[in-house]
Length: 445
Image (tube, rainbow, N blue to C red; front, top):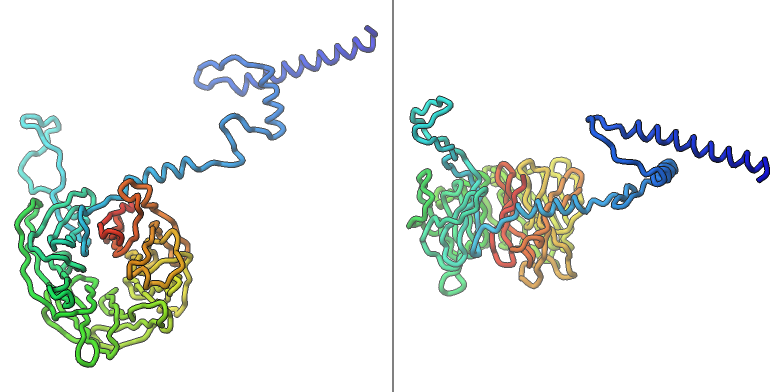
């Protein structure tokens, strides 16, 4: 070997030795355990090449992909979490329901006789109570009333008065009165029964033989709404020259006419005490109109006009009107600013409910919408939707999907949500599945 080659070889060996010594010194320093433990042995060759990779920016190792974060695990966790929240309340189809606060005794820990390690004062005290969101609903087939607490679903029969085949039901007086609508034996005449429910005894939630007593409103009432404080009714019925609108108590007393019209096809709403809304019954081929009646002043004001397929839902504060057309495009009319906001989802106002703050909406939004005449085809049952549940911010127009019902075993066939309602604390969302008229509850918090 020539002298020149020998020198080059010695230099290479020295460089490798210096690199090895430097790396091992750094590696040992960086991996010295802070808890007094030990670090496993070092594979110098593999660590050396990993060091080169880290310096060149290639940090990919088995099971990791920092450049493309996979959030599927988070999504799966959210799905599992949601599965604990959706519950079918009713075991039979319902005609209507209400949400109210019901008092019950609080659960208190038992004290074993003779044991009082903390020297607690065991003098008799009145049991503590709490008010819990509850649901009361009418069985469609029998007219029997059932109820349950929202946080502990357990159907309990409240009344045994039989009213066969109730098509529509409402509750008033914070759930203490009921309105049931059904067809009489001739199959044409609409009967509207209003009744008072027996008072409950605190803690007496057992099945009893409660009977409902009441009276009837005029026959063939075409539409009915309950006031926001649940103390009054507004109903429409045909008269010789058109239709009359009456306000009464929820037991049919103290009747006052606040509206009349030669046009008879109206749908009503009562979003707040000073505002009764009247929207023409919708059709895809007919321009729709919306008006407002002040029940005290009895004035009549037009808000929306010339929209085919118009359906509406007004916020609780009366400042905003949610409306859609024959394309199911959702819009919001700001009554104070006279502006229109177009939302980014397509559904019907009948499939939505305003949050108590009047800035948010909860809606059952169809996954897909087939081409058809809306809302006619949906009303007539020719079209059925399969919905997700969305929460919509009306200020930004953005929506967030909060529930995919088919991920739950009991809702595999999907849900076509109607009659949405929330409790005052916005802890629960309730809705009826139009496919089978079953009542459901979604826990929001």
